Image 1 (spheres, helix red, strand yellow):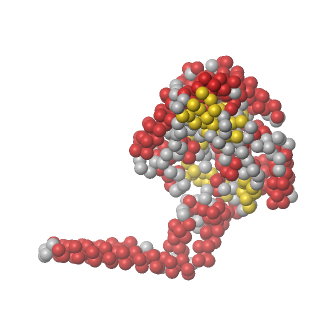
Image 2 (cartoon, rainbow, N blue to C red):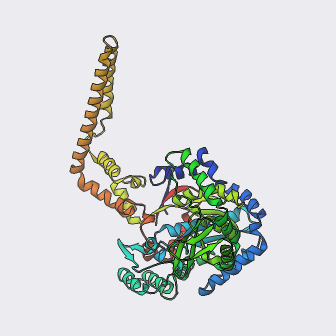
Length: 535
């Protein structure tokens, strides 16, 4: 299948922080542990292996908790074997995480998980004496329902409208039958469409809550690859996190260390933006449909917007009796993940890695190994027909990444029989003014200012004429440029990356069960480039 890889810094869709990270620039190195190169994983394995967090007793708790979580679905032999392997100190994980978006949400859900699957394969080839398990961490304790309540299909937003409170993983799937009917009307009549309809129905209509439904769907899509799906909203797993919950509430280690790191990060480069600001307490309290922040004042603790209150001793008792009621926020969740998993590497998007960069000093303070951080694969999928159209219109893969205005300007200049580039005229004008500057040097120096002002005025005039000519040619060549813009809009809908807008079902309906194996074949997680893939 035809492919092309484009460096991230040439796409225009990644922040300077992420581009600097991928390029291994020195200014970003203090904020991560080891760069994700295959040869660097040996030291990461050895460091994680010596950690008390990977001892047999904790691994057995993890393995048992996962077996309990899988009771509501039929796991593959590969997945069950991987869950069993996690009890061995010779097994390590590669983890990615994602929200419980309706029907998986945007396409990059697939790319995250496939990046994790493929990295575990590469690690097994390089380090055959160890085992490696791909993990999908469900963000079941999030509470932002609006972000996850829809998916896009064939240009239509299919949205689940309902009242929601508390953590999203515990939301009842009641009412999703109406969404199934709406989705079914948009689907075709082929076998692939029927599979998508049954996948939605079996996931959401036959499971009680959003976490169980998401686990079922992710398992169905990736079970042959041994993917293990973890729900952190689990009392046995939370028990392993109790010391860190107490540290967060009574020592506030995260607040001090993350705030200091965030300040250093922004001082390194003014273009670096802080992704998440720490709170004094980065924990929520969850119970009976609520998820509210815990706050402290004068050694008294309370849950916002509730009547729940404790003194220090009462709070300690609550933590040990009900650890499942304490939920980490976006900054603390990475620590929770690394405490309960024998994890080597976290795979995420640019925004995710940006907040991980704030956490290294905090991890050191609480003596937890900081994972390697890998930018997930990014892909544009196009059909053979679209490739043929691009070739006919002389649109390159790199052209697609241009902004709308830059794309049209480039096509106009290529199509125009008139030379719209006034560079040669500008050079000729500058040569003439060079002579005037030499003349000015021989007379009153005040004449220099007049020459400079005139040069600036005439260069600006040429630039204005160039823009006027470009606009005129845009009108003349509108039909031709519109055809080129159509293909760009197809592949970059609404001027955004395809992977952030389209749902996998749009491609699965056409390519069926070949879609995921094709992606698994062509996505290379350590390659660090944007992939354009013709299906």
